[in-house]
Length: 316
Image 1 (spheres, rainbow, N blue to C red):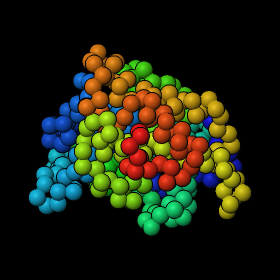
Image 2 (image 1 turned 60 degrees about the vertical axis):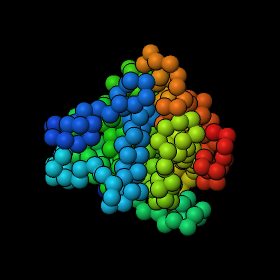
Image 3 (image 1 turned 180 degrees about the horizontal axis):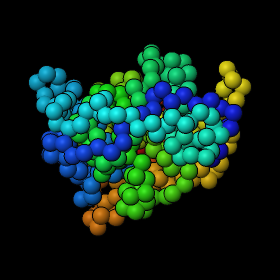
């Protein structure tokens, strides 16, 4: 994966909160990690982080009568945390080729550009950008409560922000889940979380009623986010009409295979197997490895919202 060295980067939606400290309350009861099926701790956007999203979605759907995660006082308020300046030096695609941090900016820019032109053309929903992509270390307070590094990448619909502790890719994805390393793994995960933002804009999250099971709404939500990630990957080398340049100068078959390998390692069946338990589809929240690969490929090969309608099929 290489970026066009002449591309200009926009850091306005990127923020780094630095290292957080443990706060009282929050997710998981006092800042603990959230359990996922198979006994492992939550492992992010491809592992178990959707439990955060689903819990929030379900309580939002209940209205005022439902419980909700703490909005303040239960964790860190990242809005009052000093910006670390982590992305200040990210100006061009050349910077993205030399720096993992700047590559993250470039991926966000590409996702923003893609969905800002794709969504209005294919739906009644109007596009607006996520509030930010925020990186952190340790702990962070969010609109969904306090999160820890164990949670991994996730999207919070309350504040429309993607949160990411970048140590997830080595400490959890590779070491715990046996996932791949490679330049395109993180872009795939960020694209998956951006897919949740698109679902939020489209109102798809409000359709989530069932949280577990092989054909549950939570599984359909996650597989659709994988499909949306595939849609973006398909477009990533497309030339921008305004600038005459593509942000990505190359996206290889090896890059796509990295994304597929990451999706495979995040399958509920693989997570249950690695935790030493039996494979129990009734506990699934994200779908099997084969399903995750299938839907990423669907988005990549067909490239339309209609093709990614996981809620409209009985064949996941």
